[in-house]
Image (cartoon, rainbow over the protein chains, first blue to last red):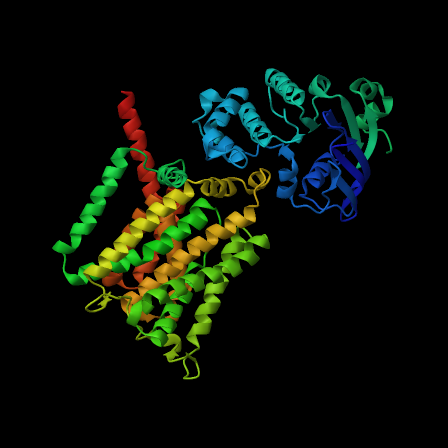
Length: 238
Length: 355
């Protein structure tokens, strides 16, 4: 049983087909990376899964339930969580308050402080808990948002370029963080450009190109595929 | 037992991340201000006491706007619509029901309820229709202006509800003041001592209750929506519901202002929903510091007093000064002047402590 499945998913803006008949399945417990050149339709695909865009046709299933018409917050409550590309945090609130808002939904008030402390520690942000989130470093902001996303204890975590703007050390630490979450049973789907990071985390990789699934396999299969190399250089016709 | 601990948990929310003022020092200050406010009528004549009640009347609308705009991030430009609807409702109800048996108090509750119901309907279409940002301001302003125009043309005798004549542009008068039923003679609350203390008590209750609300889980989500609505929704919150609830509460408070104002002067006119009236609450709340209830309260009171002084001396120029004040605030202290002063004092104190 796939945890996430899309069937013949279509979306176009005007005459531009950004997602064309995408059939995609994600297995529970998998760490999966979505790669592809700019404009391949990765972000649109994410927004379709989250419900921020409505597909023109096709179906989205989460844990065998049809969520094609569900509102974004309903999908989140079913167990999907997301970290956006640009850190989506509450800048004028403290780091602690950011996590409180993410946790209070399902953690009873008496356990809230304890759970916030644990999460701060997991994110290496304990020392900055009183700091306004807008004053954190870029990497810390990324972590804080990952923290807010995992605070929901999702079954599926969507990450849109989680390591964008991070130093190599921060990127590596993020990868290890994801491995720990994955060991606890979280399924991860990430859009990523950094191939070292993809190699560090991905069990499987899907290449999107011009809104279609172009190739799928292990990272070694993908890097060895001459067609993939060509689309990145802009030579192939889809 | 469970009820008691729940009550204690609720009371703890009087302090929290969404309100300034955490230490005993702050509460000592509040107590001092309150004591001064209580003692004030002893040193003032009854005209000044009544005039202060007039200032107090507006503060409910200001705090409601702070909740909707300062905390929730939705700029409603039309809070006067609820002010006016509640004021007219109070007039129509009391003129028809009379002031015996505490019926004016029932009318107060009903009038506030009517403005809340209007806010619920309007808010439903705005928030569930995903109208936000500047468009929310435009829609809410349009509503209050439409109501003003409508009420202004209700001059003829055909415009009456029961025995209450709406009276068009001249406004509606002759409604009784709020009256408390009392054995041995009802107490009519004219702008004098009893009304002063009642309004002051009501202010304190609303202020403390709103502090608890904005520091609660509900308040957490409200400021999250202000900061980043998309993120708030992607944490599983149906943000439209939170925005709607805040809008209804804030608008009910505007309604309360409307009822108190109408009862205070036994008078309400369409101009109370006009362009000028609609703009003033924005000035009060922005100048004080909309992001906090206390700065809103202090700022609004200060602006109201200054505005009245200017009106006495310079009539229409007062409005120009208000406009200039708003522009200066936006340019120099976007979070509000009172908030700016609080921030500066905080920095000064910290520097002193560091030494």
